[in-house]
Length: 292
Image (cartoon, rainbow, N blue to C red; front, side, top):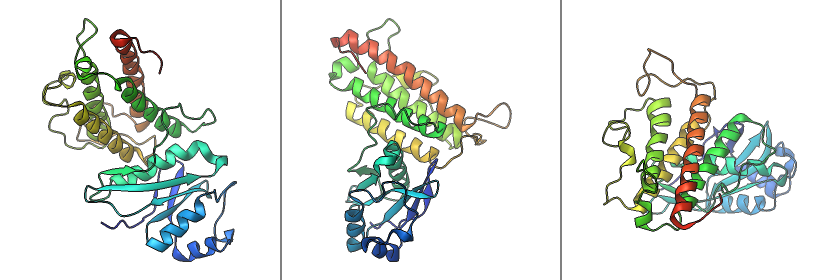
């Protein structure tokens, strides 16, 4: 399937499809055709431009405050399963924006027909966002991915029996917590912020039923659902203003207060932080594993 590059933006970053004439000028060493930020082009820029030009692949220049700080594109067409490989790069002077760049491209691609997964790059969420970040949207975006990644790291290495067993009197299980977080994201971003019609926002029962996981639902299936929902959430947030108010018709009606996207992001972030702490305790009780 063929992907046609189109302009899109995330909070702070603009993704502009590169024109053939500009590609040729850049490959010839003429940087006057763009407003290049410090350190751009980076070491792999020309290789990416040349590959895109030779194979007719979509390619974007990524701008911050009107200056080109990075670039990205696909490395081939999507396969029969809807998987597509991507490549991204950013100048060292703007390295703190790499994760946002990768998340922006993957969120946009995830919204294209037939695309189910992106490979080849990750937003490097195993570490906290750079301490130099000051933009609230970038911080919320980065910390959400940090905690999503922390959840999966905490579950990694646990047996199926350990995942489905509770270590506390209240009875929750690690696999149930994973399912809860998946549906929690859906309730706040798709059902809540976008007002998408969701028949079973709690997963088949009333509030609290999302903690219950049938025995025939595998760990792999639940992790895939979690990652897919996180990708949908990123697509919802990408380009939206923090002061945008949740739409009417899903979780919220015209009666009562509707939260802003900033409030929703912060609420979801604090819920992740609280539940990762729960997983810290559960994992220590299971096998003594400590750390983030």
